[in-house]
Image 1: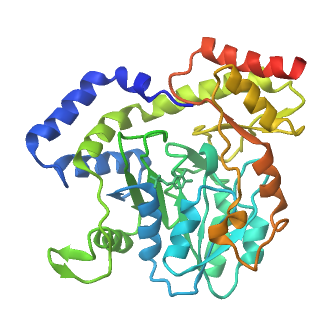
Image 2: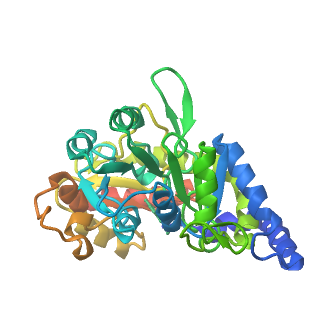
Amino acid sequence: MVDLRGQHEKIQHELNSSILKVIHSGAYINGPEVLSFANKLGAYLDIEHVIPCANGTDALQIALMSLDLKPGDEVITATFTYVASAEVISLLGLKVVLVDIDPDFFGLDIDQVKSAITSKTKAIIPVHLYGQGVHMETLLSLASEYDLAIIEDTAQSIGASYNFTNGSMKMLGTIGTIGCTSFFPSKNLGCMGDGGAIFTKDALLAEKIRMISNHGQKVKYHHDLIGCNSRLDTIQAAILEVKIKYLDSYNISRQKAATFYDEALNRLESIQIPKRRNESSHVFHQYTIRVLDGSRDSLAKFLKKADIPTMIYYPIPLHSQKAFVSDRYSFGTFPISEKLSNEVLSLPMHTELDDHTQSYIVNSIKEFYTK
Ligand SMILES: *Cc1c(COP(=O)(O)O)cnc(C)c1O
C-alpha cells in the first residue's frame, strides 16, 4: 500500500545527517529540533502556535482536555472514521454523539450535525477523511451559532487547503478552534515512529495545550493542571524537519497518481472514483473507490492474487463496534456509513508509484470486470 523505503532512499543523506546530529547531541528529549520543526510546520500551515506531541490520538485527547469540558458534555463526530477520533471523547468521560457522513466526500453530514446539537453539545470533531476537507464554512457558522469548539482531525489531510466563498484560503487544520495531526509513518507527512501535533491560533489555548502535554506544568514541578506526558522525540522531529520540505511535492505525487487512477477507472460502471470538492484540495492520503455492484470483496481477492494490496478503511462503522455499543444506535441507524463500509476499497497510494505499477493495477481491475 505504501513505499516508505523508496521515499526515504531519495533523501537518505539528509536524513542520515539529521539523525546522526541528534545522536551526537545527546538531546533526545526536547532537543532543539523539536522547536525548529514546530516553527517550520507553523510557517507552512500559516498558524501561530504548533505544539508537537507523541501521536495523533494524543493530539486529539489533549485538544479536548484543553476545552474544560465536564463529564456528560457532548462531542459530535462521524461514525465512519478511524477509532481515535471518537475514542478520546469516551476516554475523557464525555459523551460521543455519532452522525452519518455524506456519501460523496466521506465527511460529516452537516444536516445531521445540526440535528444532533443539544444544550450539552460543546464540540465537533470533523475528520478530513482520506485527504479532503469537510465542508468547513457551514460547520463554522453552526459552531458560532451554538458556541461550539471545532477540533479538526487532519491526520489524513496535512497539506490540503480550503477555499472560502469570500476568496480567502486556509490550510486544513487551521480553520477550527484547534487542529490535530499525526506523523504515523504512512501519513502524508510521516516520521519513523510515532508523532503528532496540535495547532491553534489562540495563544491562551496554546499555552494550556503546552502545559497539558507536559504534566500540567509550566514551571518544572509546579503542576497547575492535570495533564499527561506526550512528547515528540527529538529524532522524529529531526526526520520531520527534513521531510516537511518535501510535503508539497509528496502531495503532488499523490495527486498525480490519483489522476492516473481516475482516468483509467472512471468508465467502469461498477466503480465510483473519488469525488473532489470545489472548496477543498485533496491530498489523497487514500485513493478510495466505491464498488457499487457488490463485488468489492471478490475484487479485493482477485487483486490480492495478482499481488496487489488493497485495504478497507473502515470495515465497521463506530456505532457497530462493541466498544461504542449504546442504546442510542442499532444496525440501520446510519445507513450511509453501513453501505459505504461494504463498498469502499483503498488502492495502493504513495509517493513512489510509477506509471508501470499503476498500469498493472488498473489493468488488473479492468480484467476483473471483463472476465
Ligand atoms: C492516523 C489517524 C489518527 C491517529 O493517529 P496516531 O498517530 O496513530 O495516534 C487519528 N485520526 C485519523 C483520522 C487517523 O487517520
